[in-house]
Amino acid sequence: MNSSIPLPNRANIHDDEIVERADGSASFQISDQLECTYQRTDAALWTRWTPSGIPSFNSALLHDLERGSQLIEGYFLGHEGKRPLNYIVLRSGVRGVFNVGGDLGYFQRLIANQDRARLTEYARTALNVVYRNYLSHNLAGVTTVSLLEGDALGGGFECALSCDIVIAEKHVKAGFPEVLFNMFPGMGGMSFLARRVNRKIAEDIVRTGRQYTAVELLDLGIIDDVVDTGEGAFAVKDLMKKRERQRGAHAAMNRVDRIIRPIVLQELHEVARLWVDCALGMSPQSLEWMQRLHQRQLTIFGRRIEVAPLTADISKTSAA
Image (cartoon, rainbow, N blue to C red):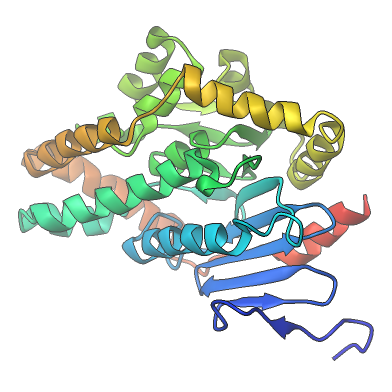
């Protein structure tokens, strides 16, 4: 080991998952699919997922995210002096993809078996993930940022929109393809869209199923910034720097925005119940379209997933 790198000390809590270092940074080793890196110098937590197989929200990853959110809250809440945290950044470790959404293969099996209980459990976990993110994991003064370095579809787009800020690289496309197989975004997408744009724009996006370019999404007011490909992490760091002097005001305005345009968890669960009903009532033709999309995903991602290094990217941006 390089002697210039301090040896890590185990945290007092969650010893098997959080590794603290002498410089105040920490690593959250939540699972093979999810890790976080805390930089005390920037008061920022970078969260990265690397789903196994198709880069979707498989059930295990959703439970990892749910548990990870609880770990984050427990680690930082009440320790603002020792562990300052101003930003939580969501990003993907899979090159070219933020997340393609729900686990279509899993959905097909549950629908074939008419398994309402497991579909409901999947929806419950997904809603807890996006809602806790919407609430900044119950951490006052924290701004959440989605960094789209790749495409965000369906549930992936829903998760991105649950953040305070969405930054996308220029090549990115995003949208809700669910209507193409006679479904709809059931994990908060319609609610999060309604907070950002008017009804007509929101309905056009969910009812057409088309993919929008990052520039189109910026023009519509759905995302907050578009940067050149490869510049996403630099843009996040630049945002932190620009807002430093007014950080308190921006954090307060995030809370005001949630007061003015609130999303209630009960609303999300009611929508999810309709989503489960719609899934269980899918016709054979609709299931065939879902299967076609799933097969396309298997064709694209059946190869070995190329994972982008997280530490190197963050260290580069830190030096910028």
